[in-house]
Amino acid sequence: MDASALLRNARARAGLTQAELARRAGTSQATVSAYEHGRKTPSVETLGRLLAAAGARLTAVPASTTVVRPSKAQLARAGRGLVDVMLLAEALPTRHDPELRFPPLTRFPARGAPT
Image (cartoon, rainbow, N blue to C red; front, top):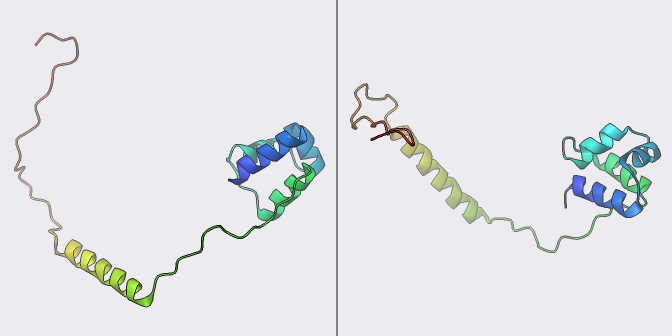
């Protein structure tokens, strides 16, 4: 869940308007609105303060999945692949041919126009 949804849900559960939450948290209603609509992102400290003003708490819980760290062999293989792609890109011609080798596109009649 993102910060905007978290804040919106906490405020709704507390039965507060944006103005009431702003007053409790010591900020403006416009700022709360910007956070709730994702136009601004609050710092962790500010989000914690806003949630506390709504009677909620910001907590950290262990992730349900573990972070997979690639092995040195996997990183080396990916690096070689990247080098191959870069060498291929370098081998491609960099100048465009001034002559068009394909037939020009034909114009289609506008919708409803007689054909």
